Length: 522
Image (tube, rainbow, N blue to C red; front, side, top):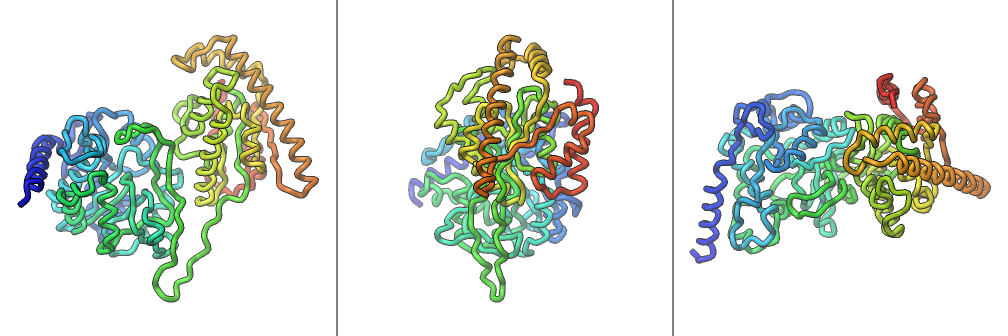
């Protein structure tokens, strides 16, 4: 046995001893709780994702875990708030800052901790006999991002999943597509060549042991020192020996923010930019690909405290794709329906309460283009319309028209004096960057109002020119704030008709009930 291999084994034995205290434990009421083998996440067939996973595995038990660092309770809280899957238990991640990687490892402590965390999940499943009784482990990371229609889409996917599956990816990134694009199995399922990313996957039965052994093949891993855990998994997929499946379009994305592994800050991502090859079996006809949304994006333009948040919320409930991770100050509990990526771009350009640009317009335009292209692709895959909302878009209407000449605008109109008073009251109570003097609040609101009015006049002129040339051009629908609050139903029906949305009765009702009496207080 070579000296290098002996050293590798000694290093891994040391790491195993140092991390042995990180077991699946439950501390009642603790925000850092993990789980024991008796946890409720070991389920018999039930409804929802875990029940369907159990059914897809012949009625086997299912364990659902979310990997989260003890020092990132904020990530756990965000995940728990946005996760539609019940009974997902927190798994305390191995902290790469505390566990020293072996000498051959070159990718930093964060990537090492991530890999060891996934290995420990598999290790615990093996100790609990999941490989012997065909049990399923659903592994999620705390940046897993669930779209609004996740429940409906995942049900279709799992019902179409072949019975011979070993590993299922709900989110990820296809790799090696020049060698072999994902192979279509049916309308919902593809068989990938290689999958990168580990924010959402499930493994079952004997494959748990195969994957565990593969990831723990340290001599082989040491020959590829730049490989993270997902790169190691790719090689197992590439071998073709196992049945790996994925949805035709990813069901779970990766939320934006600062990565605990790379330290870089990214926007929300879904990686739905792949092509799919026809199924290899004879006689199969590939269904036509779902086209991107043909209609232009829709932008909500309105001042701060003008009703733009509730208007964006109506669009969201009607199925318009505003982004993958929505937040905002307004309407605590629902947020302002602002995509974090778009909000970041707007605040970099016009930091509140500035009325002048603070970033290079060329940079802002490039970032907006990237954000819009990604949202348009995602909206196309979902068969809906893309849109965006942030008050500072009033300053950027020319830029939006350059990026998408067929843009549609919903102008939420509230008397400016009311909006000024409301923003002044909010700023007096706010802390940090949202706090501003009454003079600056008024200056910002009047500047936004002037920019919006100039933009609306420009849209009217462009629309007239486009009509004369027989081309689709920009358009505007104006919603009066007080009319919306007094009688939301006809105003919401106007929005549906204007955008040409095909909505279900429950979507329309959800939009109507968003405008509740208790929200009419600002």
